[in-house]
Image 1 (spheres, rainbow, N blue to C red):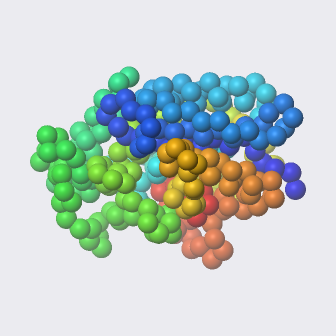
Image 2 (cartoon, rainbow, N blue to C red; image 1 turned 120 degrees about the vertical axis):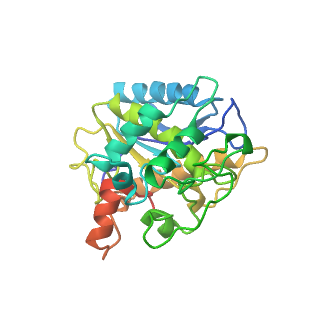
Image 3 (cartoon, one colour; image 1 turned 45 degrees about the vertical axis):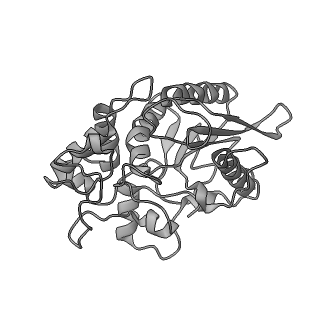
Length: 296
């Protein structure tokens, strides 16, 4: 069985408020085909999100000129827990409405200064009128609708704390956490607008599973598609850093090599679909609002 992709680009994102490199910053791992069609790995560690977008754009432009198809993964949720869109009055399709909303509201300057805490507070006000469900920020950024610490636990009639994918991944953090270690919420608020810009700039780009369907993919399903953007969770793999290498770099390399190996064996296509027996309600939530983690 022929492989689905020519190249694999994995991104470890960061919601940092100032330029930063090294550990806990943005790492872009690129596993690309060379002139002999052999895979070669390279990495980039841009200091800001704007620089990261530029690196990604240049890389994808090169692949597009070659007529390649690329799998790109980002390590943050591309959607929100089911019911979020309804609370915010989002239009259908909910995932697209949420992306457009964040692209409008999230302000991210060239030096990484951003308003993610203010956006979280504004979303809390619209969803609950209190400091819920988003939480976590420096004391100086606390507002009446955003607390430095968890405001309260989620109840049965609230928007869920975790998406279906988060529970399946076992250990994934909640998107509602905006600060502290594992603050995937800050990554999502700053990252989703970047994903939207990258997707909108390419006619042949598709965001999985929202635009491809949550189902197994094959070459026929990807006809005319040059880029598939997916959510990844690098911690699913045990990456071993080389001497002097930061963990983030080892992880994006391990994830890229993992998906490339599956693709070479013809086993990557089924990973884009749900597990056998998944109920219709879960399929609808994942496909329309929550998204899923590739490989879970």
